[in-house]
Structures are given as C-alpha cells and as structure tokens.
Length: 360
View 1 (cartoon, rainbow, N blue to C red):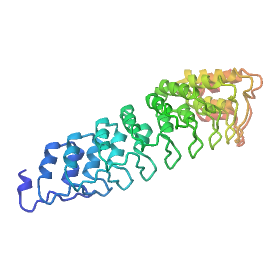
View 2 (view 1 turned 180 degrees about the vertical axis):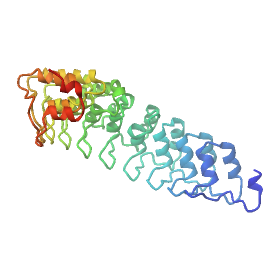
View 3 (view 1 turned 135 degrees about the horizontal axis):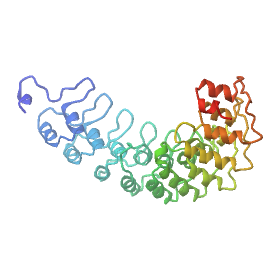
View 4 (view 1 turned 90 degrees about the vertical axis):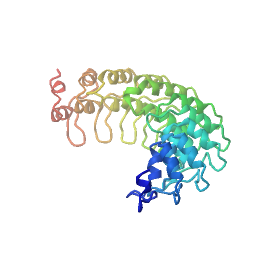
C-alpha cells in the first residue's frame, strides 16, 4: 500500500508480457491484494495481456474461487472472454480440474459451456483428455455433461473426441462416464485414423499400464472393431505390442477378428515392434514376444519394407532373450541382411551389445 500511494506509481502499468499487478495477483490467488487493486481508480479489471488472457482467466486456471468472485463483481469483466488461443476461463478451469471453479462459471448465463478454442477443443475436451497431468477430471466432466449444450462426442480440429482423449490418458472413470452416453461413438476414429481403442492400447506411460488395461477392457466390451488400422496401418495390437502391454495384447489376441501378424504401411508387424523392447522392462516385452510366437499365423522371419526382420530389431536393441527365442525357430535366418546389407550380427556389434553378439 505504501508504494501504491506514491506519486507516479501506476497500479495498472503492464510488464513486458502485458500483465498488470492485478493479473499477477489473480494468478497467485492473492485475494486481499486483488480487493485492494479493484478498489483503486483507473484499474481495468478485464485487461488483456499479450496472450489475450484476463485476470479472470489466470484466476480460473489456478482455481482461486475467492478471487474469481471478486472479479465477477465488476461489470466490465467478460466471464467468457477467449484468449488468443480461444481458451475461455471455463476452458482453463476445466483443464486444471478445478471442479468448484467450473461450477461457479457454469452458473453464469453468459458462459458457453461448449465453446471450442482455436483447436476445436471444448471445455469437455480439456477435462477429458487435455488436462494437466495432476488434475482430476470426473467431477468436472459430470458438471459439464449436465448441460444440454455440451456435446459429449464433439471432435476437435484433429478429429479427437473427448472419449479418445480420456482413453489416451488412461482415465477409466471418465471413459466409463462417456461410454454411458448413447451419442458417444466408442469406435470413432480421428483424422489420423486412430480410435479410442488405439489410444488406450498405445498409452503414454508403461508405469501406468494397469489403468490402460482397464480402459482397453471397457472399450472391448463395446461394439468396436478391435483390428481397425489407423492411417499408418497400425492396429491396436501393434501399439500395445510396441509398449509391451502384455494384458492388452492378450485381450486383443483373444479376439477372432484380430490378425496377430498384420503389417503396417511400413511392413512392420506386432512381433517386429515387441522385439525392440530389450534394454528396459525386458520381462513384460518378452511375455508379449512369447504370446505372438505362440500364434501359428505369425511369420517369425517376415521382413518389413526396409528388409528388416524381428531378429534384426531385437539384435539392434540388445534384446538377448528375444534374440534367443527367435534363433530357436528353424525358419529364422540369422544372417538375413536388410536392404542396406546389414545383418543382425552387424547391428548388434555396432550397438555394442556384447551379450547378443556372443549368443551361441
């Protein structure tokens, strides 16, 4: 207050990012400071920074309900003001998983609960699949779905629906909620051809494979095509094999219409991808390799478009156990060169995988 009372001090001066004292105070949840600043003359309570964000936008992102309520008391504050990316305060609140904040904003008539940003992402899209990693989602998703204006199956500019986003995040709670809506297409592909099942099968983290497994199980309980390839020819099985997700691989292999040896556009099969998992978390990758080798349809020495076989990839990645299993098959040619003339032994040697090089 001492500084604010000095002559020449402008409380509404902006920094290099176009942000005012009020913007910073709102972003940090400093309710008392916000109250003081709003009580001064010539304060623009809705001033945009260089990114088009208002103090309300910053406060909503942080979940500071007291600050938001004070800002909303000002007539000039636009509660649905989009920033330069088209994100509204509601969108920011949904992305951050602030259930109380979302509830406050949804009570305002001026707020459009289904307003897309420049990427076509709605508040529901953010809550379901684009939210911050630590944010919770189920409560926010339920609040948004209570509004009739909200389309639970609305795709963004990349064709991704809230279900695809939730499946890709491994959020079984949100997936269950969305699957409970009749209008939601459980097998809807995005612009890249990936379905919710494909997103769940590829996951984003091997340390969270259990949650993806549960999502895969839920999706397989619906009328989905389990072997549906994306634009690159990759199937859910291909993605699961690459991640070493043995349980999803097992579930997919249990479906009659799933081809365990289906190559993608590059000619790579699920076995080719699984054979790469040699240096990290070897045990679960080897379980996948064993499951695939147990299928009669799988051609163990099938080359891809670059002439590389599963053995070639296993050797390059130092996967001793996979190399051993593949060499145990009579049909596997241990000296088969790829299109560049590189043999599995050459690749293992260049990678300094001594264990693979010295295998009998």
